Image 1 (cartoon, rainbow, N blue to C red):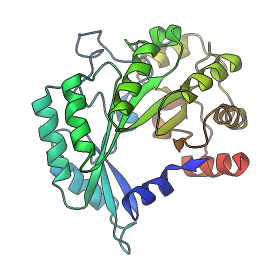
Image 2 (image 1 turned 60 degrees about the horizontal axis):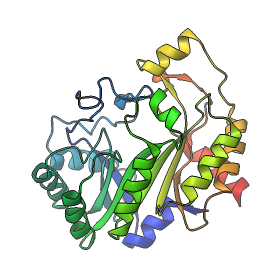
Image 3 (image 1 turned 45 degrees about the vertical axis):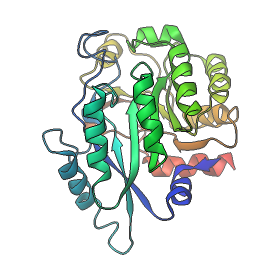
Length: 290
């Protein structure tokens, strides 16, 4: 298995730190285009750092992010990737997207962009621009796939199908742009055979990177209300580790694995509460996976 840290160092020639940025864009299933309220599992406060404040300019957010990591980077030169993380960061007019991306790239020591979005929020014109952009800087487009099961996507109110994910990944990769995917493991109606079927489908996509993480029940979400009304069994850390190892065994060796778990502020998490840091979990997976 190839890890993301060594891949970033290989791509950019040194230590790399991602800095989250809030672009201020929304999502089609939040603004009424497809729905309101967003995905049933999602609460952006659970994964957005304090320095990524959408009331600040892109430049000020990135400078605040640098200060946040300053102690850790004190003795080494670090290159940064502006990580447009919250909501759907291609869901705006192209002129506005160009403005925010170019502003991020103008900040000192920012070496590229990671742009998280939905598979239904791209267009030929946007891909034309991203293709040009990828020729002059590091660029990774990260699609929220979440599941290969359309019933799951309906249940969690994603508002798109797996076919749309397949099409978006392929169209982006055809432009020579690096493509990432994001998958959630642990929906209670997706059993082990279904997840291995999914792994085989994901393995066929022209992905550069892949993020996996456990389903988390986050306070204040629709899924939290569903869970509290009728709780379902959640995997132990050991069970989840075994699931990840089996899932990964279906994936190509060339795929760069970005992460295996997500860690939200403990006070926001209802379940599972494993008490294991994500870095410790990654080492556990890497050690058992060989």
